[in-house]
Length: 271
Image (tube, rainbow, N blue to C red; front, side, top):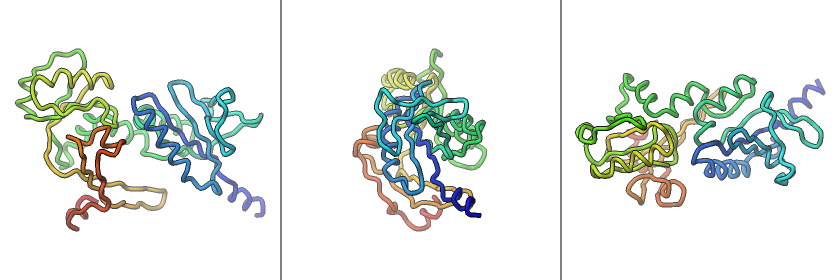
């Protein structure tokens, strides 16, 4: 029993994974480093792991930032690394990657194959939610109201008149996969359609043109653990720009009101 207690009280090795392969990678690094400041060092050995393409490196340990020339490469066969001659394995992966491969199910499937617990939604949910059009098709018959949309593939011809007839003006054009409003445009006239699609195609080979819905923007998070779930307060987003774009999200050009100033009945409906 004494040995069991020691094992139970042993600090867990946490791989705090950030970076990624999309335009969002720099935001991911900031998110990861911010989270690292708030993890309980009495409970966890935190190792910051930077992913860029096939280059996976441990860049910071509990002892501090690893010098560039000493950055430890992750062994992808078992998601381990060597540190001071000792092999380090992880008890859990905390995924803080924005975009690919951390939000689209790829990294989730990797950890599932290795039986390493991880944070975030599972492989199926992540891959489905990351593809905006696929997610809308999946949800369409559930009664959830959604704006009208058109999927446009790079290299195909488009009928701008048909697009305006179906979606009206203004409407949004955005990459079908990706976030942080990279490549997103609020189109206000026909002449803006082609440049908007070009910007979206810089991020993804498919673009989603979507009807503009004029209303208040509310968001609601939920935290799920093994044995419980916590519905967080509703937040209202009030952008100071034309929409909740990159500047509004990350550079203060918006107000995020928590809890949202809405009637209790609407709050309960959202939650």
